[in-house]
Image (tube, rainbow, N blue to C red; front, side):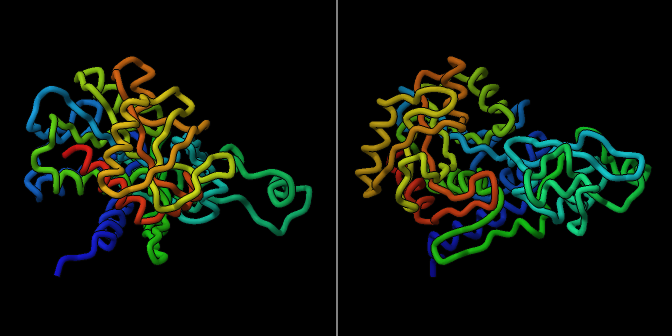
Length: 345
């Protein structure tokens, strides 16, 4: 009996989320993606910027389409290791310590992964302690919190923990939680989109036009991978699969309908491409929503602004608590998959 699509999608996203992949240290998820593509008979290569690219020859060579889903996640980067062994970190992408809360994080040392406790200090204090203000007036910030490993500085150095070491939420805290047709997890941005891309690779044998499925690197720190890819290869259109933040300021009302962006913090998207995607949505029986976002960017908007691609679009799945413990409807992810499958076929 064939596994229901949403069950399969949840299981695949769960596997991807458990792969640590802070920007620039994406080896775990690289190994998973390459193994998965190999298992379904899809050839892929990794370029010098860390992008994984699966190129599929189309029935027509008139144009080349690129679909991107970034494989990196937000986290932290070590700034210094103190003499007392405590570690100071700063954000890598849009990470905030109050989102993670006190608890286990993983330091990805050069030789060992070291668990640490993201610490804010004791609550049983008065105004004499600097932590008191975080109970009443201010949110904790990266320069006022620390990572406690209970190891000495020399032990951390031996493990390869140093300035530049990446920090991510502890693996045992990352396992996604299912709430009916909803999935809740850290790093749905953008592991859920990576899952869609992998499923497209599995089912799209001969797309209508030449197609690159691009698992892009270092998106959270400036779309570095996508900029490199689009500088090296000319594509006629680029579509990014992304998370779409739900907020009172945006007209995103349905949890189950994909979102087409018209503009974000980096610039305009191409309306003719949006219209073609909307038509594909209609043909596949999917309704879409439209939004203009502010504090947001994607592989598509960054590369279009740089002049690397003539047309770009961003297809998003609505989610609560973006860049935090995110919640998304599996139906919206399934609809993104159906829309793209129709468009590319």
